[in-house]
Image 1 (cartoon, helix red, strand yellow):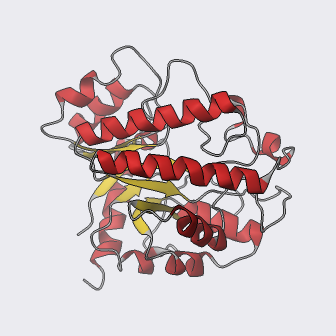
Image 2 (spheres, one colour; image 1 turned 45 degrees about the horizontal axis):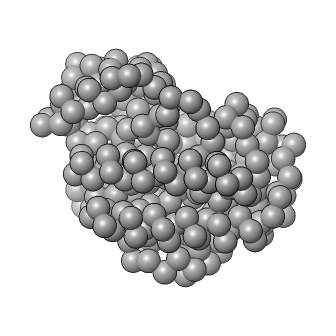
Length: 291
């Protein structure tokens, strides 16, 4: 059966040392090291201390840098693009040292974002795409380079489908956040052409983007099934990605059973210990049905 992980975003604390201490207290042994934890000098000390009893995945903006920046592998700004690629190479190195099968990262943007705009839907509604085609080409170049680097370290390189929140006006075929719709993924994977490239399918992103851009999220999931190497799991009302709990009757639940060996990462945010265990139990129930 698939390994079930909790994202660091699932914990109440934003300090990694406290998150890992909570894992010890709750008997949690599978954690995705992800965005949402603060930088500190000894950030990784607890990770290495628990390496013999913990299983980690490395995702996106981890390890968090001392000075915040927007990670964008499709950026038109040379300094931001360089910083983004360097961050990914360092994260790949960490993932390799931890024995991970892959490193995963968010898809790029065809807009200029500042750190304070991440997650700020009102600010994002005012953004305009600067050059979709140029952003797509840059993203392909970034992925081609990073797939080769990940391969040299014995890893796959995964990208996560993006989210377009309700109320963001855009051309549905050329959205500001890349890889939010099925056709983009097929074009991207063909353009990169590297066997190590895979998809981290975020079901919550798919649900919101489907409503905004006008497609069926289940058809998206099923059409991308040959690319999927991991899942991010949470739920929402279809208007905004707010990382809410999911039930055994969630729209994506039946589809998960077709991926018995794919890591499942619970990305429900800010849970008490009881709620974390309940979500783990729900996911195990979903995966066990029909097995």
